[in-house]
Length: 86
Image (cartoon, rainbow, N blue to C red):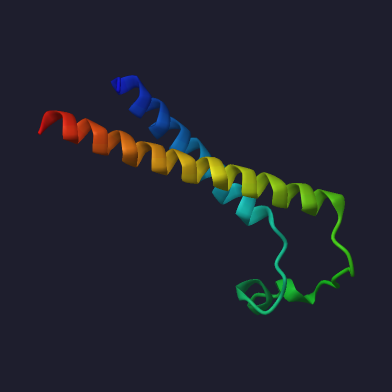
């Protein structure tokens, strides 16, 4: 496979890593974790989750799938690239 494929996967991996980190940090704490230790658990929780939270969950899962696929693709590319030189 061409080298530009690996560079594309590396750029995609970096972008999705940063985006996944930001999306995870945007989630609201459910309580009982580190967020409640520092005063984040004081807020009242609603019975249902809002549309914005559901969409945030969907985006997080989608970016996570793309992140995982880029890692698998990069690993397969490296395996094929090293098998061709050996």
